[in-house]
Image (cartoon, rainbow, N blue to C red; front, side):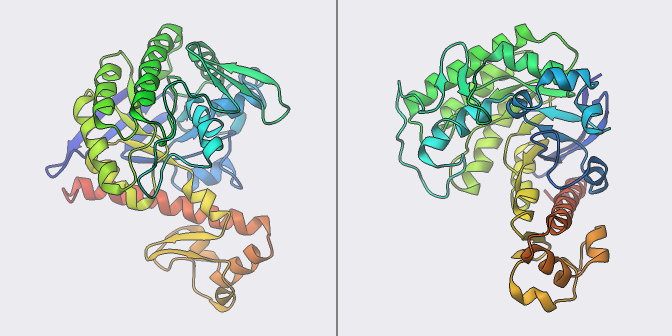
Length: 378
């Protein structure tokens, strides 16, 4: 069973409150989606992730295919049982790895840049370490060097075996360094792959199509029209959105104005707390990001007054909690001094405590976002 119900529309923007119903429970939207790449949110147990307020997780098809393999996951009773997670799950398609292991690695860039990029990738260009074809993508395992192929049929088959509630169509996540000609070819390929994914899809899992187009508005809007016309249960908005927050909001808003109103939209790979209002006011329902735990393991703490690095020596004598306004168990129990000591000593417990706090903070911010929409503040 999959259903999306809109409960309220904002009077100020495209923001809406909703509920996504899945076989493993409901997701109140807008919702932040923590990333559990290999079936785990690093350093935390599944019950701790739920205690920290997570409603749904997104796992990585490519990495779970490499290890332990979808056959092992299926034999264990599916990913929910395998990782002991009782709430909804998403799996991405592996399309992001087309970028991260391809042009992203070649040029040392992520999909979000801080300044206007020089367009280096032109029609006919191929990445160094992977090969993109009309049928799919040839990879080489970073674990043992084994060659592997991932295309629309393969991606859907892996995701169906893994058993998440929401799965995504296989796409090419393009580099922000792509010029318009390359981007058009990439987008058209993603559209063809979307049709192939729909044909390959055999289960009752909700299948989302992915809108691409990079920072080229005309291509984004065209992709939204094409993907939006296909019989997907929801939609993902992928790739890059330019290099400032205003372009992010406008691009998302334009896309959401074209996509069907009655289906949920997921913004892939974007979701720092300062992004939440932009995403929601543009019409986004769910959004994922590695930031809370990725930053936590490096000592960066998110708080109501901004970020700080808990590894700084000055916190060794600070007896305050990480965030005096935070209601999480970590802030109720431990001092900055203790956590600073753990992080400086490279203790795993320190990373566990910072990860829990950051994850709780992100989920609490998403709850506040829903309250603001309810009160017509966004």
